[in-house]
Image (cartoon, rainbow, N blue to C red; front, top):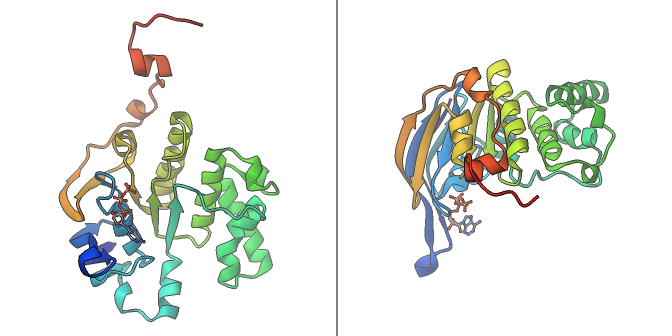
Length: 253
Ligand SMILES: Nc1ncnc2c1ncn2[C@@H]1O[C@H](COP(=O)(O)OP(=O)(O)OP(=O)(O)O)[C@@H](O)[C@H]1O
């Protein structure tokens, strides 16, 4: 589905140069949710951005959905990228556009007609449960709602792959669970392959089928996780008190 062949990326040059990703080879299997974890600065985001060539590698190849992206001319790469949606930690919404205006952006850029655009925007908003917010501006939304808009926008072109860079790192635990449920729904009902960079182990345990571990630009481990059963995933959530103190603890309110 996505294969990276010995990709490398350096920033800066000469003695100030720094190899952020160092000859990494990795295959993400179609239909899976694949986590990329590792310490800060390990090169996780750089590796993720290479998967749609948002960050072109200095060397190595990227094959996505049967196409060698590194060999495509710019115009064809732009079209190939439509099949690979992206979601970021900071949502990256346009604040002077409504929710539906934001979701419409990729369709406008691709020249999709107005009627078709309107239908697809509503479909995407319905999928993430936000059709009632279509005419609101992002400033009026919660963090979780903003991330859902960003996810709806990433779905506009019916991608086969969704790349997520720390999508829940700005969110509280309850909102994180909501967003993970949306991502799982996208994987199971639409069959979209998801690659997610995160530093939150709970996110990995809750969501991922397979994990790759990065350290200092290299891939140092990779393994499959046992699938969680729905019953286990939907067990009652612990309160902050229970998470921090277990059973005990003296109340002051
Ligand atoms: N555009 C850039 N210019 C210069 N250096 C960069 C750039 N992007 C990333 N780096 C550097 O490359 C290294 C890897 O960055 P990257 O963001 O890929 O790591 P990461 O594992 O995602 O880290 P974090 O978990 O902190 O986000 C870091 O040292 C970072 O400072």
